[in-house]
Structures are given as structure tokens and as C-alpha cells.
Length: 352
Image 1 (cartoon, rainbow, N blue to C red):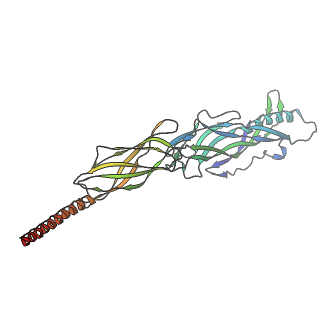
Image 2 (image 1 turned 180 degrees about the vertical axis):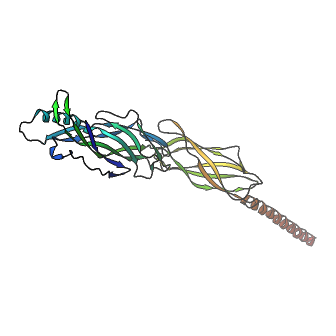
Image 3 (image 1 turned 60 degrees about the vertical axis):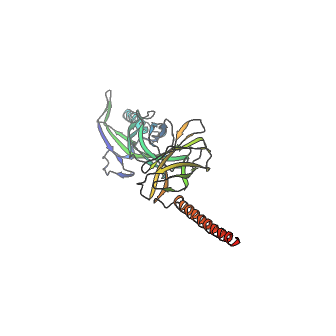
């Protein structure tokens, strides 16, 4: 038996036909059947598809070929045919049944939304006959932005595969052993399918610092007032802020209770910090995090939130100038008292 094939294969996201001259016997005027139908590859996510903002995860995707032959049409007239033609027709139909097989599947996942980024390239899934599915899921890596709003994000899965487009069989004679000098021509083409998957970014609380007040001076102890805002979609309760002090700061009270915050609400935390005498006057970033209870009653800890505050030079804060003013006031009072005493004594001497 001679087996001849014409392939049309995928190249990346485009298609390219490999030019090949048809065999002399591959004459579609002699084609016995035109068959309809083909591969139908569907995709499903394996496992949960709900994630948190900032997650880097691997998606498992299962493929299944549900392709069917939807019909066929005889290309021959109703005139009586020979035993050879009958056997050739039967053999051709056997080959035509392979039309539903998806050959050399390549899957490409992409996202149209910048909040979800696909970091893995094309994945190969091999060949799937009708009714078969991948023995191992395809794996695609994605990154979800830390700033992604809650909601559903569609993902585009493009599938490329080869499939048998047409068959022609020819032979010299029919014997008890089969068809002698049988020639089989197989014509392959490219199939392309689009499947939509999706991931969900869950509702959750998120926080940012919206205001910082208070003065810190090198060598002194002071208070800072930090306003936090819940910028997420979920309310929290029993929230406590904890700071991580580092040089030049020290504290004996690194926590501040701020209670419950609904979406969009703010609360103020107060921290007492001592600045080392060697602290350089400049802007500093202090790390903080919020421990809270979510609406499901689970304890959660936020990502690190930066508090930006300034350390002033020694003697430049209001406390130093206040002491100076106090001394001046005392001196003025003393001078006034002395003058008053002198006037009183002079008046008394005059009366005498």
C-alpha cells in the first residue's frame, strides 16, 4: 500500500501552507465521499478559579475532544458499481472516520486586561481522538496585579491542531486478500478554535495611608497620628495596626487599635516614637501592617504599608521654642516685680 499525504501545518499564531504537489492519483473528481464534521476541542479549568490580588498562580487546563462526524455525501452516481469500487468506498469511509482526530494540539493563553498577565508560552497537548481528554492538564502561569479590582477577568485560549481534511483511495484489483496496489492519499489542514476561560479576583480589604501628622525631633520623644483608609471591597473589624521601628526610632508601644472599617472608611492610629540623638534630619519610611478579622471571621494580616514621616533637627520643634519663651516670660515677671518693689519703697519713704 502506498500512503501519500498533503500537510497544512500551523506556524506560531499564523498559518503557513507547505507547498506540495498532489500525487497524480489524488484526483478529487474520483472522491467517493464528502464528509462533514471534525474535531471539537473544549477547555475547562481544573480546580478553583478564585484568587487574591497580587497572587502568582498556575492554572491547570484540561482539554477534551468532542468532535463528531455530522454527515456525509456520496460523490458517486447511483449506477451499479464493481466489487472493487465497493471495497474502496468502504475502506475510504474507514479513513474518513479519523477526520474528528485533533493532531498535535498547541494551546496559547492570553489576557486582554493588564491586571492579569500570562507569563507562560504555548503549551503542547499532543493528539486527541474523539472522546479523549488530556491525561495531564496543561499548565499556564499567571500574575494578578496587586492593584486589580475585584471581579471576573476573561482569558483567551487559542487552540491550533491538524486534522484530516480529505481521503482518496485507489487500487488495481480486489482479491480475497484485499485491494492490490492500493494507494491512499490523505489531505491534512489546520483547525483553529477559541475557548474562553476566566479567573475571579475576590473581594477583600486593602489599606493605604492617607495622612500623617505630628512632629518628631532628633533626641526627643513625640507622637505621630496616622490615618488609614480601607480602599478594598470588604469591611473589617477588630483591626490593630502594628509598626516595625528601626534606627533611628524606638518605641515601647508599637500597636494601635483602630476597630472596624468599611470600604472607603478611615481611622486614625497614634504612635509614640523616640528619635535617637544621632538621627539624621530627613524623611523616613516606617513599615506597618494591619491585623484584622474579615467578614467570614478569619484572621488576616495586610501587606506592608509605608508610613512616611520627617525627623526635624534637634531644637527645631515647638517644644524647644516653648521652653525658651517660658524662660523669657519668667525673666519679664521678675523684672516687673523688681521695678514694682522699688516704686513701692520709694513711695513709702516719701510718706515718711
